[in-house]
Image (tube, rainbow, N blue to C red; front, side, top):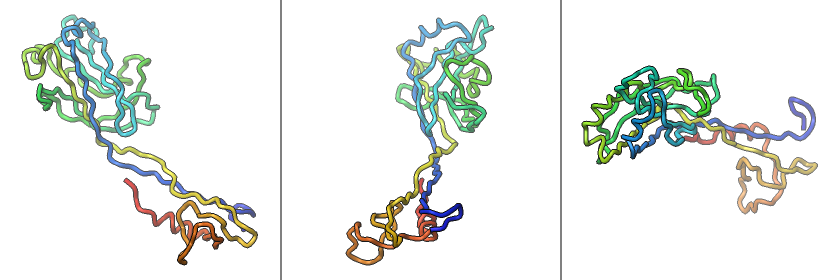
Length: 226
């Protein structure tokens, strides 16, 4: 068989990049709110890592605000970090940070935002480049502490919704590498799914190997995933 790059048997394969809309949320339950208030201004507590759209994320909760120079911090700061994503391949995504009431409903929240996430790592410095998205003034502590629907028995629950981007994956589409005899007949099934048209095929009978055009046409005829 003569190919475009030389003489010999031609191996054929195909792959596909598929995408689907990604969205999800994470809850962070703080069961010792009064104790977190002892954390100095500018210091944060991480949530656990969570996965949305094939990416790893976590929240950074600043009980006394992100501004380390503030002597009397009034606000809680809350930021969302795209964890371990290699820069400079930035990701644009939408996020919304809110607080749930005792029934699990959103009772307080700031408007959803679309931003560029640059990624980061827990071991990196807490710089503007690392914490790219969030709210320095998420909620005034005085306002939170006087609302029993948000803070009860020293507990509150934060919710983070993330979406507005696509989860992309590369998947195999077809591969054909069966052995053939000197007449060009294939002894085994082609893995990309072409079958002889005659009835009574057992899967082991010798048959004509589909040509390149048939292989290409089969690949292009496959249904879209996602």
